[in-house]
Image (cartoon, rainbow over all chains, first blue to last red; front, side):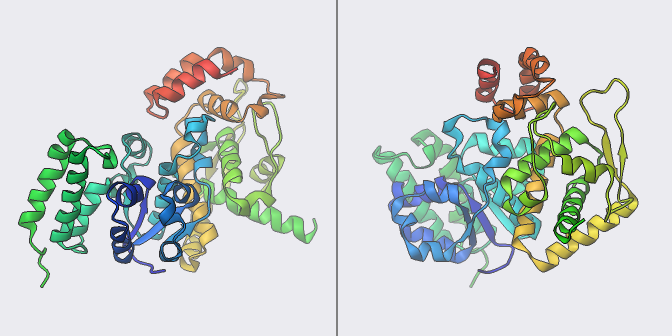
Length: 196
Length: 192
């Protein structure tokens, strides 16, 4: 696996959004080619089966075998509903990448997990993005994804939400207007981000 | 000491150094011990260095205590300050010395240079526990530990006192934004 500052630790919501909600597994492959993704066992167990059983996927990401949740367990207790909380594992892996100086993004969509980072690990706060923010930054900050591709993904999210069949990233139409529309505008004016 | 015991002693002393050096602040023996207990649960590579038993103040490791008070390989790298007369909880305090700070920098640089995955995960774990638990009072820390690992309330001499104060302690934890409302409720209701 590559060693660079383009490493990403993401919670399962990121993978679920593309595979289950948008039914666009290929976009996951696109992202794991652009960035070096790290994934722990808990998150791995939460992602859709089609991805979990896919050897190509498993061979393209870095699988981490440490139980970071055990360090945080006293904060959340023994409540079984937290046993599968992959976001805290993603936060642990982000620490590992940060120590290596390779952390680019910690992708968290859950507000509680984001607040947890803000309140306890301030030094990671500027690396935290949601899935939508990650798509934006991938186009505008990193110049890795074409703006057109970013717009395509965001429009697909809007479309699925509008259809009422699914709620990717727990968003509704109101939230779409607030969050996604301004980013689409930004991407529309972002062109190719200076690339030829 | 056998060769195995020597290696264990040295490993534990370096582990203690890594925990101490992670922050520029002194740490109580109680915090150090409980944080090492969580790391012991987390990282299989360090389990051979110590054992944890049920004791007066939750999980306790004789090996940790002995290494902190009488280090052999890392002599003068930290200073142990015994607890004051009426201090029943802290177990004393440990402060890194200048020599310890230098040794810490050296060892961390070596770890980073070697890119030893196991050790980098250990550094990550240490950073997490120090940032999460250092800011808790002794009783807040014990409340969370007893509630999460109830088997360690056995033999505890402070458990009943903490149980009596659980509402106030849980409220403080929420004020500090360490726990959320769900956890607050679970501490107040289920703690027994």
